[in-house]
Length: 223
Image (spheres, rainbow, N blue to C red):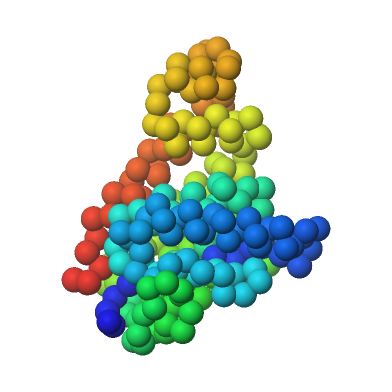
């Protein structure tokens, strides 16, 4: 079936420099299997490793793009991954079980997004995102806003200490109160409050919520 889809290409940064590349690839396989199962209803073609350090998948809607990307990113931490998102048609047949062989503008734009990230990294820009969206939608201002928010989120994440990351990811995953997080992590609630404030958790969460709302409400097939 052809039509407009959301293609995602993931690329492990500096993969050739990894001390145990095979172990990282095996971990990535497990993470992708988990994502494929958890977000089955959103996936048109399951996330698949296509090269040693790359993987791709195809979504039929934008409802859980952010959750999917962040889950892969957080599960693979501290391995750095860049993500290219492409919105567009897939002009070939689509294999549900494996994202290999499908082709079309959706994947071309995801590849373009990855290349844009690589170029920005080479320029050594101060604020460089690890997620980029390319689409042919008429409202390119919306795409610009989305990519700007991706950059701001990346800037916040890169400022986190290991402890801040642990607390913030726990908060995001469970959506609980500070008291509940404190009980799980066996610390006092004021400690959690301090960590969330120093890690700019609430600004980060608000930006994530806005992105999810925008990407979830757009009917890509009507654009």
